Amino acid sequence: MHYADGRSTPCEDVLPAQQRGCSDLNTTAFLYRVLRAEKPDLVVFTGDNIYSPDSTDAAKSMDAAIAPAIAMRLPWAAVMGNHDQEGTLSREGVMRHLVGMNNTLSRFNPEGVEIDGYGNYNLVVGGVEGTPMANKSVLNLYFLDSGDYSTVPSIPGYGWIKTSQQAWFKQTSASLQANYTNEQPKQKEPAPALAYFHIPLPEFGSFTASNRTGVQRDPISSASVNSGFFTSMVEAGDVKAAFVGHDHLNDFCGNLTGIQLCYAGGFGYHAYGMAGWSRRARVVSVQLGKTQDGDWQGVQSIKTWKRLDDRGLTTIETEVLWKRGSA
Image (cartoon, rainbow, N blue to C red; front, side, top):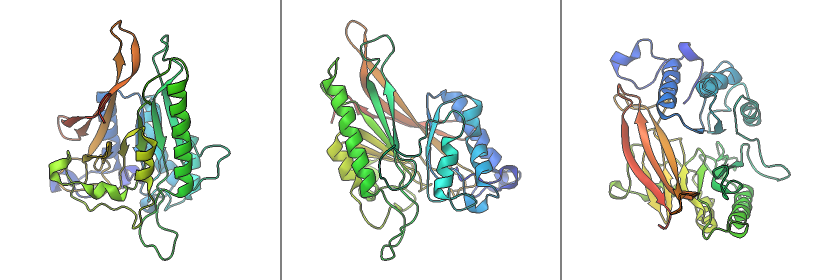
């Protein structure tokens, strides 16, 4: 969203006819539009939620950026990007502020675990109440801090997901899978999972126009080293899709060895973009299966589409990311 100071913060990369009066408030209006249209069960903010170099008060900017979700009493979760901490709050301070806000499901870090970064946590989505699946997590959500910039002098560029974070992810995934498949009612396959972080992995560069849905207009701005998190997700086996921000002119999904790697495209009006290319949001829809007797089961399929901030709030590129029984 790259939110800063609201009405006084101008838009970037919009058509000349849009420029007058355009500000952060256009970002707020878009957020209200898409939330009212989709009525989501959860809103996820994937980092660079504020552009703190242009913000006079990082806490107030974050409050304003997230305000529509809170006003609509929607549960929400956030990770940090590389710009959230460049103002009046440190990286730790930004995350502490996020976890103290209303309606948030964000967490600071797992308790009792030595881990790099801030905002590494997981959420579990329970099955339908009143069914045997009620006490099982039918969908698992992982949130990770992909850092901001390299702290290793010999390595230039952006940050990456560190070894300690991957160890926590692997342990958490293994525990969730064991509970799902071993405890009554026992399930044959692990519950699917989704992962959210800001900076793309190098593997996001694996696609061409022929094997992705959506566009790539930006280079893949991943870290200059590969820390192996994609391999960790493949080995864990439960993550079906990973969602990132960072590169505003990319909005594609591509399937690499059974994991969908997805951008959403730029959302905020104070963020760089491309004049005439609508700001956009990605929506993810998870459907449960039913038995022949009509009893609710675990997740059957995961779909996605994008909403454009145009006159009709157009829906584009609906696709199935994963279906039970597929790879």
